[in-house]
Length: 180
Image: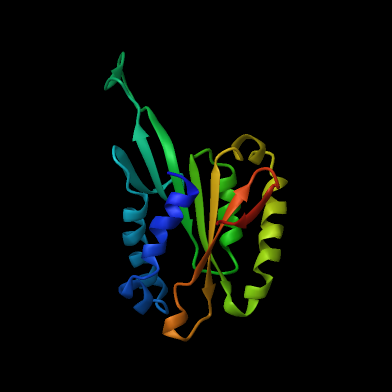
């Protein structure tokens, strides 16, 4: 799955009434978000796991050709998608750093920035880009898609909830740019 495909599926999540209604209840909101994310990441012949590698949600494809290798059980699979969702608008950059070390076909971090900071969002994306560009593991993993989905937080008006902006890492410019 590409970053664009993920975003197109995720946009439908933003319209879910149960998600919108649970906006101010972190536990209910997160539970509903992951119920919906399962449908976003679901692909044919792929399995979904929670908290594998301490990553909120992963998908993988079984690549084993037999059940055993001699007396060893055959564990052969390919990591496809790694997704982190962080409600706390101060903490999601840690999730970006974590996934910068992971070689999955698609990495996704869903984070939040207070609505009052929306005008600074591009500046934050540049700062996050600088951070991951300084990570040595990033040199080996940056060829895979990385999508940041940034939602507005600290919102009271129900009509303004679940408003997200997608950013994808642009390898040529070495920075996160708005997904078009």
